[in-house]
Image 1 (tube, rainbow, N blue to C red):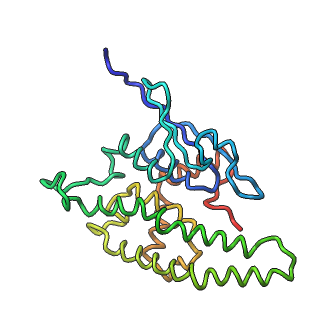
Image 2 (cartoon, rainbow, N blue to C red; image 1 turned 135 degrees about the vertical axis):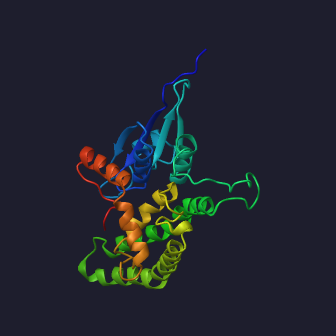
Image 3 (cartoon, rainbow, N blue to C red; image 1 turned 90 degrees about the vertical axis):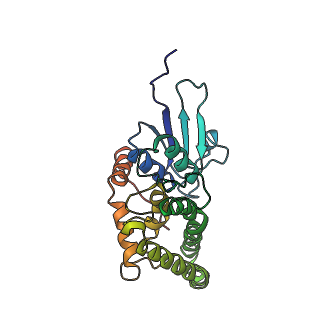
Amino acid sequence: MAATTEKPTIKLYWLEQSRSQRILWLLEELKLSYELEIFHRNPQSHFAPPELKKVHALGKSPVLSVKHPESTEPVIVAESAFIVEYLLDHFGQESTLLPKRYKEGQEGKVGGETEQWMRFRYFMHYAEGSLMPFMTVALVALQIKNAPLPFFLKPITAIVSGKIFNTFLNPNFKSHFEFLEERLNSCPEGGKYLCGQHLTGADIMLSFPLIAGKERSGLTAGTYPKLFAYVNRLEEEPGYKAAVNKITEIDGKFEVMFET
């Protein structure tokens, strides 16, 4: 029997002001056909709506559904890095979004990996494992500072928030931004992306915390010129713009993270 030529059905469960925008960008970069279901946060708590728990038990976004024409049930994939790797494994093998893993003649050998691939795999997990937690704490600190309290309590929340930034967040942001500035200075083949000359899934993964942190947390053009220019470059990528435009057309607006 002839193999089916039908393409998988892909559906992205997208939540406003969330990491799911990275997956939408990747789908645009890969030029895949997909469905989009949009969810909105609770305006008071900023939590995702309970309907997302019907898709995945944790009720978080992004979640991706991929159904092969010959399958009876879709594959449900959660967690941003896993989704990016899953999409690239299946649909990005011939693209520059996934760097070549091994040097010529070194296939399968320990230490035979290319620098581009090693950077790719590292930054895929660095984005959520190392950088994003500080962005999350910063958001909580700002919520504390701007909590709706009587005016005479405002100085207290401002002091608490300031202490979190001055003693914990700012030193860590400085370390991470200096590290990323150095990594951009030492890109393979003088490339303008973190893994070399081409945009990869790792750059897309890093886009969310860096775009959200631009002009905040000390990430300015004067302090980190290479990193700041890199973030601007990500925002100018055609795939990123296409993803933003898609949401704006459907939902009326697009914001990276909710403001406090």
